[in-house]
Image (cartoon, rainbow, N blue to C red):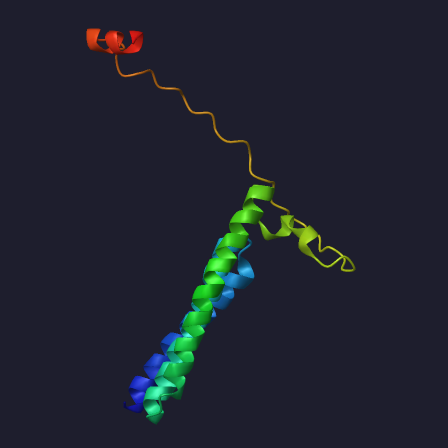
Length: 145
């Protein structure tokens, strides 16, 4: 692996990590924050594999396999928690979940709290597709038995 190739891998990893960090710090939606954290982990994984390949050592690649295993488990648990919290609050805004703090910690109040989800939009009810067909004689005989 030439130094220019190593630099390009490191650049891609750094860009992924930076984009993930910006996304994590600027978003309030839990799913987007979760995906941003995953992007940061992938940037780190690319850097580890690039360094392992450059040094001719498999240690970085083995470490990445362990990281990916832990990330897969973390993804399943985090998404289950997000779904359970969404059922409770009907929003994915992080600022609405202040009660998850420790009892001795003061809540942080946001200046621009997003309102909880509005009531669902009322959609028009469609008419059935034609008149209901009359019951057949066989169906009437079966119902009388």
